[in-house]
Length: 223
Image (cartoon, rainbow, N blue to C red):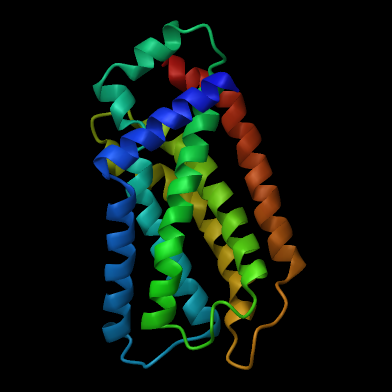
């Protein structure tokens, strides 16, 4: 846990100092919502369409953060230093996944209100606790799979191409489940209950890929 804390503090301080990841993610999301606002030629959207637009935008904004996740370690020799340290290799996996989760949370603090102002007809805050639950479960999956894909692609020359190719097929089921879970919250007739089966799918998906990432991360780091 001390190693995880040290790595996480390093990543958060670097982001606060440079602002390379979160501002780019937020700008991408807000710009996408503006484009949808004019392209759909509608005053507001709700239900399935609103949920799909928001989660697809979050997914592609997350790719920007995933691409940058291990860049500092590659360019500044961080991998070599970490491999020489007497710590558990999975500490880097946990620290990077937590950092990406926090980046996604910061993105959504900006993106969800912007989405509500530009596109959404029902208030996103009518069932805030359920929305937060879906966002957390979705972010956990995005963080785990994103960290795994970024670790796999960072040593390749075509990192910016490999990350979407590897991560998007794995993230599509997660985004579908998150979209289906969010859709009732923004129904035109008023917020409904989140279907438990989609929450279960999100939780199971997070758990499955968390175990897979834990099992294979050592090999990715060594290679």
